[in-house]
Image (tube, one colour):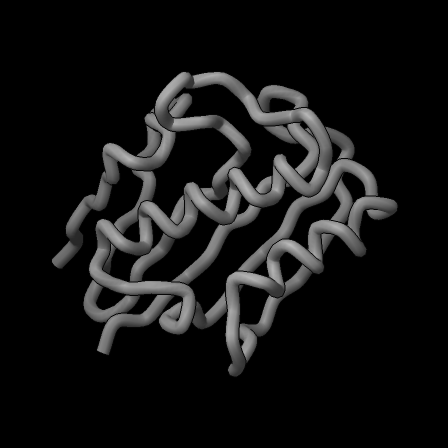
Length: 126
């Protein structure tokens, strides 16, 4: 059985997709970018603020699904410039306490709305 998850505390999808879907015990989140859910505006002041907004959007969708960062079992980080890896990694890491999930980080030529970072996650709810 598939359940669609949408949080009013995360940005409304900018295309034909859901914020997340729960299938069995797994929760698959769509990639999040730095859209402020209140204003609808992009947060692009610097890579640290942008990454923080992305992680807060992920947090909101996870909460709507009844889980948190400790339930994440896989992440993917997309960067438009690998030079931002260190700062993104620092912000990303601050949202976890231990048992970091596996992930890959890839540089891409472009991201939606010309943002610098997009992060998607998969979580497991026992």
